[in-house]
Length: 390
Image (cartoon, rainbow, N blue to C red; front, side, top):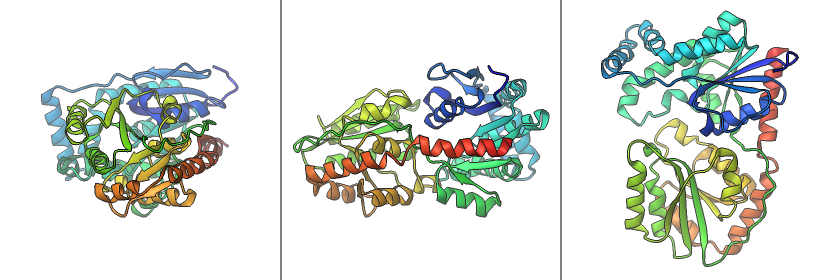
């Protein structure tokens, strides 16, 4: 690594090679910084000026997990219990030491779970800290009772105690930024989840064979079965492919069984591809489908990687009335927005489309991609880095 470049540590307690937002941060930061990546797993590929320092993810035995749950409950009485929960995890201690050893000038901490490590490391190294909250952590899974009882108070504490101590903070969407600002009194910038620009071809829609795609994680809370219900209500022109990261709880297998029952021969499941290959892979489709019920604030204001990947790939977009996505769909004219989150509503809109309608949306997506891309968003991020280190 060059001695002339500032040193940046990108910290994310996630599987790095699958995390599209973190991989973009690494890609663009390496153009100007010597980057040490701290997280689980591995990089997606080797890059100049980047080294990976993996942290071993630790799964505690049952007795320790019970103690950790007790500490989470105890945090409702004394905040010291939350601190005890956090620093009882060996991987947090390991990550802290790795970040300190990197002697960074700036630490970019991804998501709330990494923030106390970044603040503790900065205290010892003098580094600046950028907190990338991603989505709205305190309501990440607020539709789940166990989350509200155990995790929500913990994440609320982490944000309240540590976010004001960061030197800057970013998130993925403007409504989420305002929520952080009004709730926690912090200033938040927005960096959208847009992929790198690719000049991909326009592919005309075959009128009697319209291909839909949905990609992402097989996450039960997203209720992906609603999109199977949509497809079952569409006319025979429509076919749907899912490209999903596998899950540990059998949800993907349940989706496959449901698809076979509700729409035999019209829904397929294909293996996922690397994040930087998604746009080129799905360019062969006609429409990106994403119907996500607003069961929590983050889902309500969802503006995910996949939405921008649909646009980068030159696809029309079919969504429910999720405000952040709907605003961009309507501003750029790239798709259809259902009246509500019921599968029947979106199916009615799609059944009314002709191939020419879809092609016009696809052309507008290709044009929108020249604005909604990582070159635009990562310049904002690099400007924040430079400001913090000035």
